[in-house]
Image (tube, rainbow, N blue to C red; front, side, top):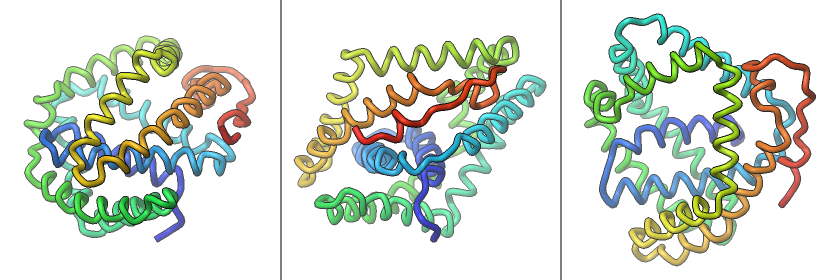
Length: 250
Protein backbone atom coordinates (compact mmCIF):
# COMPACT_ATOMS: atom_id res chain seq x y z
CA UNK A 1 0.00 0.00 0.00
CA UNK A 2 1.24 3.51 -0.79
CA UNK A 3 2.29 5.83 2.00
CA UNK A 4 -0.59 7.39 3.87
CA UNK A 5 -1.58 10.79 2.45
CA UNK A 6 -4.14 13.48 3.23
CA UNK A 7 -6.03 12.41 0.10
CA UNK A 8 -6.25 8.84 1.39
CA UNK A 9 -7.51 10.02 4.76
CA UNK A 10 -10.05 12.36 3.18
CA UNK A 11 -11.35 9.62 0.88
CA UNK A 12 -11.68 7.03 3.63
CA UNK A 13 -13.36 9.51 5.97
CA UNK A 14 -15.82 10.65 3.33
CA UNK A 15 -16.88 7.15 2.33
CA UNK A 16 -17.16 5.78 5.85
CA UNK A 17 -18.77 8.79 7.49
CA UNK A 18 -21.54 9.12 4.90
CA UNK A 19 -22.46 5.46 5.33
CA UNK A 20 -21.99 5.51 9.12
CA UNK A 21 -24.83 8.02 9.36
CA UNK A 22 -27.24 5.31 8.23
CA UNK A 23 -26.67 3.18 11.34
CA UNK A 24 -27.77 3.64 14.92
CA UNK A 25 -26.74 1.78 18.03
CA UNK A 26 -23.64 1.39 20.08
CA UNK A 27 -21.52 -0.38 17.48
CA UNK A 28 -21.98 2.35 14.88
CA UNK A 29 -21.27 5.06 17.43
CA UNK A 30 -18.05 3.36 18.49
CA UNK A 31 -16.72 2.89 15.00
CA UNK A 32 -17.88 6.30 13.85
CA UNK A 33 -16.07 7.89 16.78
CA UNK A 34 -12.96 5.85 16.07
CA UNK A 35 -12.87 7.12 12.50
CA UNK A 36 -13.44 10.71 13.58
CA UNK A 37 -10.68 10.79 16.19
CA UNK A 38 -8.06 8.64 14.48
CA UNK A 39 -8.45 10.20 11.05
CA UNK A 40 -8.76 13.68 12.53
CA UNK A 41 -5.53 13.24 14.46
CA UNK A 42 -3.75 11.90 11.41
CA UNK A 43 -5.00 14.84 9.32
CA UNK A 44 -3.43 17.28 11.79
CA UNK A 45 -0.17 15.32 11.90
CA UNK A 46 0.16 15.15 8.12
CA UNK A 47 -1.25 18.57 7.20
CA UNK A 48 2.22 20.11 7.07
CA UNK A 49 3.03 17.81 4.13
CA UNK A 50 0.63 19.74 1.87
CA UNK A 51 2.39 21.79 -0.80
CA UNK A 52 -0.52 22.97 -2.99
CA UNK A 53 -4.29 22.92 -3.37
CA UNK A 54 -4.43 21.34 -6.82
CA UNK A 55 -5.96 18.12 -5.49
CA UNK A 56 -8.72 20.11 -3.74
CA UNK A 57 -9.25 22.09 -6.92
CA UNK A 58 -9.82 18.86 -8.84
CA UNK A 59 -12.29 17.71 -6.20
CA UNK A 60 -14.17 21.00 -6.46
CA UNK A 61 -14.31 20.87 -10.26
CA UNK A 62 -15.62 17.30 -10.09
CA UNK A 63 -18.21 18.29 -7.51
CA UNK A 64 -19.37 21.27 -9.57
CA UNK A 65 -19.72 19.05 -12.65
CA UNK A 66 -21.74 16.55 -10.64
CA UNK A 67 -24.01 19.27 -9.26
CA UNK A 68 -24.56 20.70 -12.74
CA UNK A 69 -25.56 17.23 -13.91
CA UNK A 70 -27.96 16.89 -11.00
CA UNK A 71 -29.59 20.24 -11.79
CA UNK A 72 -30.34 19.01 -15.32
CA UNK A 73 -31.57 15.60 -14.25
CA UNK A 74 -35.36 15.24 -13.81
CA UNK A 75 -35.12 12.38 -11.30
CA UNK A 76 -32.39 13.31 -8.81
CA UNK A 77 -33.57 10.53 -6.50
CA UNK A 78 -32.72 7.93 -9.13
CA UNK A 79 -29.31 9.52 -9.56
CA UNK A 80 -28.79 9.46 -5.79
CA UNK A 81 -29.66 5.76 -5.70
CA UNK A 82 -27.31 5.05 -8.59
CA UNK A 83 -24.30 6.69 -6.96
CA UNK A 84 -25.13 5.21 -3.56
CA UNK A 85 -25.26 1.76 -5.13
CA UNK A 86 -21.86 2.34 -6.74
CA UNK A 87 -20.39 3.49 -3.43
CA UNK A 88 -21.79 0.44 -1.63
CA UNK A 89 -20.48 -1.88 -4.33
CA UNK A 90 -17.04 -0.29 -4.01
CA UNK A 91 -17.03 -0.57 -0.20
CA UNK A 92 -18.16 -4.20 -0.31
CA UNK A 93 -15.09 -5.27 -2.28
CA UNK A 94 -12.43 -7.07 -0.25
CA UNK A 95 -9.66 -5.00 -1.84
CA UNK A 96 -11.35 -1.73 -0.84
CA UNK A 97 -11.91 -2.92 2.72
CA UNK A 98 -8.27 -4.03 3.02
CA UNK A 99 -7.10 -0.64 1.77
CA UNK A 100 -9.29 1.27 4.24
CA UNK A 101 -8.19 -0.90 7.16
CA UNK A 102 -4.59 -0.39 6.05
CA UNK A 103 -5.07 3.39 6.06
CA UNK A 104 -6.60 3.21 9.54
CA UNK A 105 -3.67 1.11 10.77
CA UNK A 106 -1.24 3.69 9.38
CA UNK A 107 -3.06 6.49 11.19
CA UNK A 108 -3.05 4.45 14.40
CA UNK A 109 0.74 4.39 14.22
CA UNK A 110 0.73 8.14 14.76
CA UNK A 111 -1.02 7.87 18.12
CA UNK A 112 2.18 6.60 19.75
CA UNK A 113 1.26 5.28 23.22
CA UNK A 114 -2.31 4.57 22.07
CA UNK A 115 -1.21 2.73 18.93
CA UNK A 116 -1.95 -0.77 20.25
CA UNK A 117 -5.43 0.09 21.56
CA UNK A 118 -6.26 1.95 18.35
CA UNK A 119 -5.30 -1.01 16.15
CA UNK A 120 -7.32 -3.34 18.39
CA UNK A 121 -10.41 -1.16 17.93
CA UNK A 122 -9.91 -1.00 14.16
CA UNK A 123 -9.48 -4.78 13.86
CA UNK A 124 -12.59 -5.43 15.94
CA UNK A 125 -15.04 -2.84 14.66
CA UNK A 126 -14.01 -2.42 11.00
CA UNK A 127 -15.28 -5.91 9.98
CA UNK A 128 -18.54 -5.25 11.86
CA UNK A 129 -18.94 -1.96 10.03
CA UNK A 130 -18.40 -3.54 6.62
CA UNK A 131 -20.86 -6.29 7.56
CA UNK A 132 -23.49 -3.68 8.42
CA UNK A 133 -23.22 -1.81 5.12
CA UNK A 134 -24.15 -4.97 3.21
CA UNK A 135 -27.71 -4.48 4.46
CA UNK A 136 -28.02 -0.90 3.18
CA UNK A 137 -30.57 -0.41 0.39
CA UNK A 138 -29.78 2.61 -1.85
CA UNK A 139 -33.44 3.60 -2.26
CA UNK A 140 -34.18 3.52 1.45
CA UNK A 141 -30.90 5.29 2.22
CA UNK A 142 -31.69 8.26 -0.07
CA UNK A 143 -35.28 8.61 1.15
CA UNK A 144 -34.49 8.16 4.85
CA UNK A 145 -32.08 11.08 4.92
CA UNK A 146 -33.92 13.22 2.35
CA UNK A 147 -30.80 13.23 0.19
CA UNK A 148 -32.82 13.74 -2.96
CA UNK A 149 -34.27 17.01 -1.70
CA UNK A 150 -30.92 18.14 -0.28
CA UNK A 151 -29.24 17.48 -3.62
CA UNK A 152 -31.94 19.40 -5.50
CA UNK A 153 -31.72 22.38 -3.12
CA UNK A 154 -27.93 22.53 -3.29
CA UNK A 155 -27.98 22.16 -7.07
CA UNK A 156 -30.31 25.15 -7.45
CA UNK A 157 -28.39 27.26 -4.96
CA UNK A 158 -24.99 26.58 -6.51
CA UNK A 159 -26.32 27.02 -10.01
CA UNK A 160 -27.67 30.49 -9.16
CA UNK A 161 -24.59 31.80 -7.32
CA UNK A 162 -21.78 29.32 -6.80
CA UNK A 163 -19.25 31.92 -5.59
CA UNK A 164 -21.61 33.50 -3.07
CA UNK A 165 -22.79 30.10 -1.90
CA UNK A 166 -19.19 28.99 -1.34
CA UNK A 167 -18.26 32.12 0.63
CA UNK A 168 -21.40 31.92 2.76
CA UNK A 169 -20.67 28.27 3.52
CA UNK A 170 -17.07 28.99 4.54
CA UNK A 171 -18.16 31.94 6.71
CA UNK A 172 -20.84 29.88 8.43
CA UNK A 173 -18.39 27.06 9.06
CA UNK A 174 -15.82 29.45 10.53
CA UNK A 175 -18.41 30.97 12.86
CA UNK A 176 -19.39 27.50 14.03
CA UNK A 177 -15.78 26.55 14.68
CA UNK A 178 -15.25 29.71 16.75
CA UNK A 179 -18.45 29.30 18.74
CA UNK A 180 -17.51 28.04 22.25
CA UNK A 181 -20.95 26.46 22.62
CA UNK A 182 -20.43 24.45 19.44
CA UNK A 183 -16.97 23.33 20.53
CA UNK A 184 -18.25 22.33 23.95
CA UNK A 185 -21.20 20.46 22.43
CA UNK A 186 -18.92 18.48 20.11
CA UNK A 187 -16.50 17.61 22.91
CA UNK A 188 -19.36 16.56 25.20
CA UNK A 189 -20.86 14.38 22.47
CA UNK A 190 -17.52 12.68 21.83
CA UNK A 191 -17.01 12.07 25.54
CA UNK A 192 -20.45 10.44 25.75
CA UNK A 193 -19.56 8.18 22.84
CA UNK A 194 -16.30 7.34 24.64
CA UNK A 195 -18.36 5.85 27.43
CA UNK A 196 -19.63 3.19 25.02
CA UNK A 197 -16.12 1.94 24.24
CA UNK A 198 -16.12 0.06 27.54
CA UNK A 199 -12.58 -0.70 28.75
CA UNK A 200 -11.09 1.86 26.36
CA UNK A 201 -13.23 4.72 27.67
CA UNK A 202 -10.39 6.50 29.49
CA UNK A 203 -8.02 6.19 26.54
CA UNK A 204 -10.77 7.44 24.26
CA UNK A 205 -11.40 10.52 26.41
CA UNK A 206 -7.68 11.22 26.52
CA UNK A 207 -7.58 11.33 22.72
CA UNK A 208 -10.56 13.72 22.65
CA UNK A 209 -8.93 16.16 25.06
CA UNK A 210 -5.51 15.89 23.39
CA UNK A 211 -6.46 16.19 19.73
CA UNK A 212 -9.84 17.96 19.83
CA UNK A 213 -8.54 21.51 20.51
CA UNK A 214 -5.65 21.01 18.06
CA UNK A 215 -8.00 20.10 15.22
CA UNK A 216 -10.18 23.14 15.95
CA UNK A 217 -7.20 25.53 15.95
CA UNK A 218 -5.76 24.21 12.68
CA UNK A 219 -9.15 24.26 10.97
CA UNK A 220 -9.74 27.89 12.01
CA UNK A 221 -6.28 28.98 10.84
CA UNK A 222 -6.78 27.28 7.49
CA UNK A 223 -10.15 28.94 6.86
CA UNK A 224 -8.88 32.35 7.97
CA UNK A 225 -5.68 32.40 5.90
CA UNK A 226 -6.78 30.58 2.75
CA UNK A 227 -9.14 31.90 0.07
CA UNK A 228 -10.67 28.48 -0.44
CA UNK A 229 -13.34 29.57 -2.94
CA UNK A 230 -10.74 31.15 -5.24
CA UNK A 231 -8.34 28.24 -4.83
CA UNK A 232 -11.08 25.82 -5.84
CA UNK A 233 -11.94 27.99 -8.86
CA UNK A 234 -15.46 28.58 -7.57
CA UNK A 235 -14.75 32.33 -7.43
CA UNK A 236 -12.67 34.36 -9.86
CA UNK A 237 -9.50 36.01 -8.61
CA UNK A 238 -5.74 35.79 -8.44
CA UNK A 239 -5.30 35.59 -4.68
CA UNK A 240 -2.09 33.86 -3.64
CA UNK A 241 -2.84 31.00 -1.32
CA UNK A 242 -0.89 30.86 1.93
CA UNK A 243 -0.38 27.64 3.84
CA UNK A 244 1.93 28.90 6.58
CA UNK A 245 -0.60 29.03 9.38
CA UNK A 246 -2.06 25.69 8.44
CA UNK A 247 1.29 23.98 8.10
CA UNK A 248 2.74 25.39 11.28
CA UNK A 249 2.71 23.30 14.43
CA UNK A 250 0.20 24.50 17.00
